[in-house]
Length: 246
Image 1 (cartoon, one colour):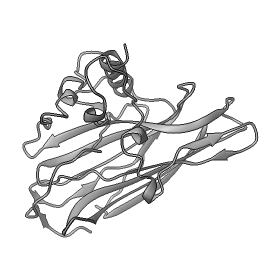
Image 2: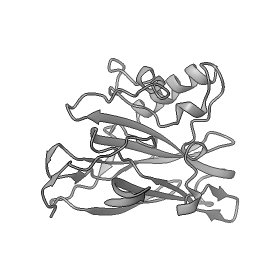
Image 3: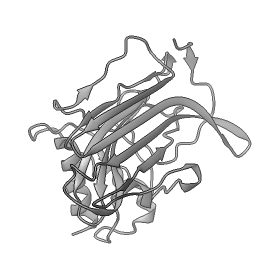
């Protein structure tokens, strides 16, 4: 069980925050108790996801910072994926809420995220999700920008890597993310999809996240999986490409 937590630590909000729409097709594994750590594995048609999430702290300059640690691993199945891929990587969507439960307003330098959020109205599309990317690396509108998470935050020093799929073997793709800034935000929801860089084949998706209110217990969101991306993910990617990659 979690202890009561108050958000008294000063935190800086930097970016590799992300979130996700939970489509009706998602397979949710519920947990009866609030936990400091979760781990789930999903054997999908095109491969296997293993997802670990936990609340922890990391050293940042002279102080420790609370983070929501997420590790997403995907290994494609050579026998069932019916494709080859030199580089299996990840695209991630995010919804970030502030301490009042509203969409977090990204400041100058990252403010394009505010304009690229999904909106309700289309069937199956939920409000407030954007492709998780560092807008400061992408230049001006209509300049090409990669939607792949690891092109913005490689995190190779902590084990993040692209994967590989051939006719006979595969290597796991691994994403490591550290959403933080919990003095300013209350929720991070993420949908992480394994995608071939060269062909854009989508191998499947998982969702994860966490909530930390101003007062009360912090919690981890149930980890779910799906064979295909949600309608919200697809809309967020369409908005991203329309803005950067016309």
